[in-house]
Image (cartoon, rainbow, N blue to C red):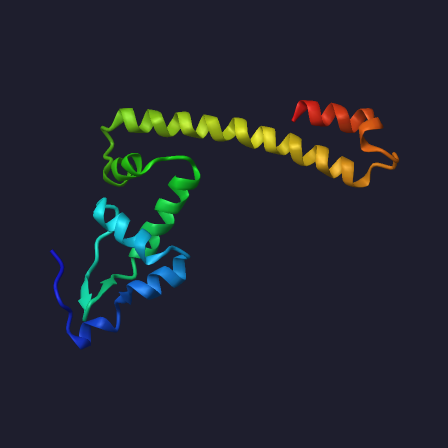
Length: 137
């Protein structure tokens, strides 16, 4: 349940528009995260939601988890996980392994592109080093 906040308290709080501007998220995304229990408003300033400044850290964590490929339900569990949640921790370890594979592939792709950018051959497809790097990537 949200409460209306008086003017003396609002100085430390962030308006939903401020949070949106600082995070690059649309206000609708913030409301969605709120509906899913990922963030919680501090109250309202008039008709606008307000948040504690710590919500920015929570949203950074959510963004990181989303970029790693976790879904909203998994992130919700992630935010509430305790030391005994072995299933979630196994999922996190598996996701880290997936990222290792992706990083290795991207590293090979980067090497191929760097070689291609400096290759003296007229046509890159005639360069055996470039083609080998592309196949490896």
